Image (cartoon, rainbow, N blue to C red; front, side):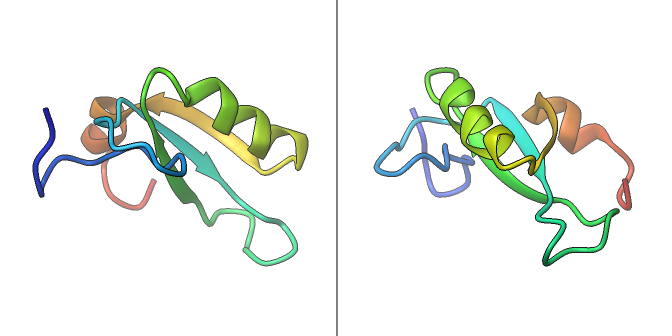
Amino acid sequence: MSDETTPICSAKGCRAPAVWVLAWNNPKLHTPERRKTWLACDDHREHLSRFLGVRDFLKDVVTLAEWESRPSGE
């Protein structure tokens, strides 16, 4: 069950709670250390990872809990 504060999956039309963080970077637009993020549920993790991976944008995939526990600035 999700509410206004529950992070949700970034897949189009999906309203499932996010479990994964896909950290990515477009080297044509971002500095090497910059990380943008998409959130994914279990069902969409692989699809979103492939989409970013084909473009060589995907840098890291971690659980949402792990991402939130990282010190800021990482």
